[in-house]
Length: 339
Image (cartoon, rainbow, N blue to C red; front, side, top):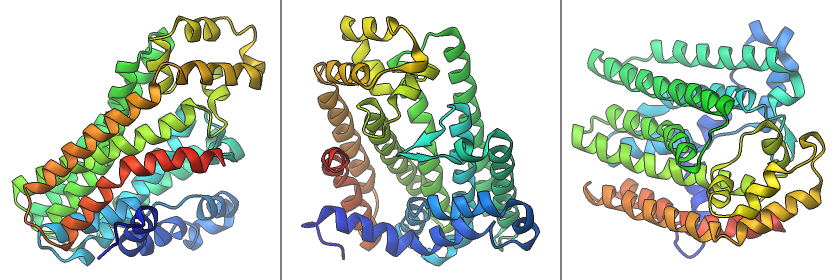
């Protein structure tokens, strides 16, 4: 069992023990395809080096085990879902015009829109090929297919609405939070699929799905806050493109000073670091950190309540430890990023 006295290490081990192997396979599976290596080696090597996602397979495996299933039964579906997540990750950067993320170029930023579009499409195609070849019964296949379709429809609706609102310049914190919640259906779907493969009851599937949704929102809020206070050095780019993060929108709705600074930037193509620093300082004066932490704690409590409805076992206890750690990990991430 994982220890509670070292939260960060325990959470890292949870992800690696349950999702590390599939994460490594997902990051190289396209590169290892001889049909793709010749013309796409450089961008595929870039993905293999810069992208890794143990969270998706770890949560699917734990969900399966939580309902009494064999966790290895999720391996193929987890690999496919990881590749779908890669596609959305790539395409989201294109939509947001994000050329850099976490101080590194994105695939879109380094290789351009065309290559990013192609790689995202190939990742999705590979994912559905894997799903199509899975040896599962008809009912499970139909259930998983519907879960994936519903998830992708929600993502498409969210991006379409976001693009429309951005064009109309009417983005608000409420609408941005709705988009964050929609993006979190990625993890909701992962846990539901894991529970389906573990032969979970409808009630168990729904409880685990809601746990996944809460966790997904928390993780999206954490990334959003990092951007809002410029810990990723990407806030200027967001302001230039008019794609403000949720936490900054929340703060600006409570501060005339922030709204004035944003509207009076003389030239958004050359925003000075002093201007970004002033915006961040003004945002922190609105108690935006306390608000974000309050939301994270509320979601943590809600996720734990979903687990209470399940039979206690090693997997549910691991999921509980992981969700309980999130408020602490959020605070620690701010100190780590600053150093």
